[in-house]
Length: 468
Ligand SMILES: Cc1cc2nc3c(=O)[nH]c(=O)nc-3n(C[C@H](O)[C@H](O)[C@H](O)COP(=O)(O)OP(=O)(O)OC[C@H]3O[C@@H](n4cnc5c(N)ncnc54)[C@H](O)[C@@H]3O)c2cc1C
Image (spheres, rainbow, N blue to C red):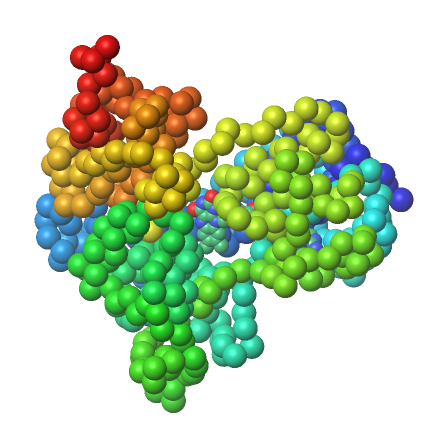
């Protein structure tokens, strides 16, 4: 039986980053991946496919130019599912190639197969050809990620009633679509299809959406969605989903109303992919959603030499944070020092329009009783916004009145997921409102919104240099 210093199950962001980290520290590492190619959910069904689809949709629809040329403007008149898939396949090929090269360069071995525990330090790998092999490890990292939640009550058919994995294989773009679940994935796809002129209805039992984002930003976002005729049915549950004899889908809501559409995307959550790991053999148990609990500093499970990182440990369930978790877990596993990442990390929602945020929301600042002031800037106040024909876009910053430090930055609009990093840097470097007022920004840029928002807050906070 082969022995390894670290065996990693899953080749998504957490697994691959952890594996490469341990290999760089001179350890013998094996990655076990059941998928056809390495990369995980992130590369094959999640982050990269959805972002590629978004980019293709925005480019082919001419979305970014509509502020100038009107809502009827199109770059390509008839956009097909094949148009969307073409760019996706090329992007995925590049991603996989880069990953395989990284594994080869760092001498990380990888094997295709499904892993499960035999004992707490032995894993069985079931290969596609029916062969099973066993490997032994000093440490094990479970980076198995999640899969879509598929309740039995939903008649998934892979054609018109789909989960978010299946959505990537559709043959035709629907004229109308209902999205059940207004979480990040549901909202991203709903707005991408809306940009492709699909009539989209979003249904969620909660009366509000994306509650972890600053409320004012969400109000702006919802205004934008309603302005382009997206329908949001909030505070109502989808009780039943069925396929009608005419090929349409019908959703019955808990108040008896019906929603009829060509396609249903069921995006009401994901569960940890732990069901086939035979966790009991290792002395581990998962929670009701298949997730594992870990020490948040070391990513050790209750069995100290078994680590878990990435989406399988729950919030924030991002590719970006999963990578950091994998790196820390691998360093702890091989006995290296693992520095905690800085306190504030950005959260990006690649909807149309984008939302990105870092630090405290206004609601959190109020809850903590911190005296504060906000600064706001609309993208249409910037020259770059005029050039780009932007009608919407809002940047909001929150500052402490006592220390003048930036507490949170919240953005909705074009480029939000890139722009947020300026705020993130100032936050983690403990910068104050003066940073934005005193520094020169490139002109014309959307980043100038930082200066406008900084000045907006500073005007109300008072100029400390005058009072000494
Ligand atoms: C539609 C969608 C959009 C997203 N968009 C973003 C985004 O824009 N930005 C962002 O930061 N995050 C995004 N995410 C989240 C991101 O994809 C995840 O946070 C990230 O993929 C989690 O990484 P991970 O390392 O936990 O594992 P995953 O990427 O989930 O990969 C786990 C791997 O483990 C393998 N595996 C599971 N069980 C076994 C087993 N028993 N044996 C062998 N292999 C196994 C699986 O096949 C899989 O390849 C998105 C997710 C989805 C679904």
